[in-house]
Length: 64
Image (cartoon, rainbow, N blue to C red):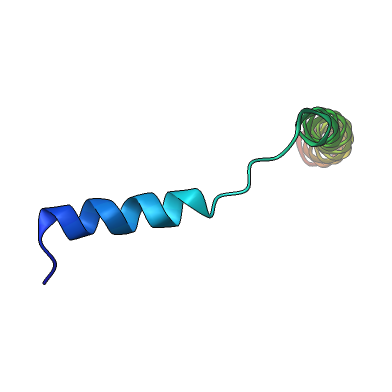
């Protein structure tokens, strides 16, 4: 078991190895996330429309 001073030293050594993304990479990945979210929302809206139409048609046939 390490003492608190060794633990803090090890944490700082590990934190020094972190490579932070640049501004351009952050902007690019953020734009990609928004584009993918928009595409998925359109896709799931269309799937919902198809399922809703199918269920409505089945209910209309069964009830009428």
